[in-house]
Length: 387
Image (cartoon, rainbow, N blue to C red; front, side):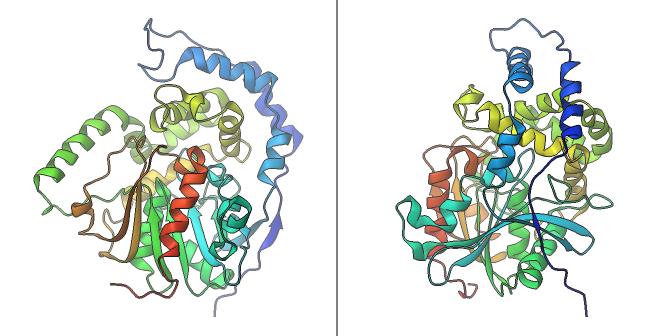
């Protein structure tokens, strides 16, 4: 019999010495040159914007105010196997709120869901009905933010095992729903594939698993070509983090501005920004997301997920037979495979083309995201059998 650990109440409160060290490094930061170009983002991170960002970070950003925002909802930490997992847990409204776990990705964090937690738990506060409320659980991935790092890289399939233990063994939910994008989508699909005995349905806004090789109709071939073109432009970071995460991790961990440059370019290119990063993400939110890596020494360990995923099975163990909802956000930089191809591996029950938003869907379009997630799970019973 395994000993079940009890959750401990947690509150974000970073020692001032940690903040002073980051500030001192920012004060010594030096911006280098950039190519002459009418598009300052064409060659990667814009030096012009990074300079503005650095000035705001040093002279206007207030971490203590960010702590207040992060501490809005109940937080806990609990040891799950050999990892200390940090998570939000907000009990929902209504007679029987259904449990829902939301999983973020890289280079995001729990901040992605900060504006949807209350919307999902208490919909009546936003014009909805209280009986649509969820018990919302939002964990930090292992090695991210306030979750401890594993001793060696692990992938999303292992994280799915940890989430099952968190939800069932520790929080006591016999069945639950799951949602995710980026790495969160991979974790969520593994939950659906490996744990249908306790996961009733899943919702994703990205699919990282390729359709079967025999799905070679004209639409799928066109999608593969489109994906290859995007990967050739955008995936250099992923290959590096997948093969040599420790090299880039060591290089970025000691330079706050360097890590900011590595991350900000992704938000500008992956969000539905149309070239203007602050049309979707304000500086305070961007800095808070970056700080969640810096204040915990999580820069290097967050990259391990890429290596761990590369070591795991490249496909899901079998077809995901529980109900699956898919939301396609128009600004997502990775093209989604055609529905017919995805249905060979996913039991898709809802396929929604969203009006706006990109890779960081919950952060970019919190109201539309919450409405879409609620709509899918409303039509899916927590005890619904697989197909």
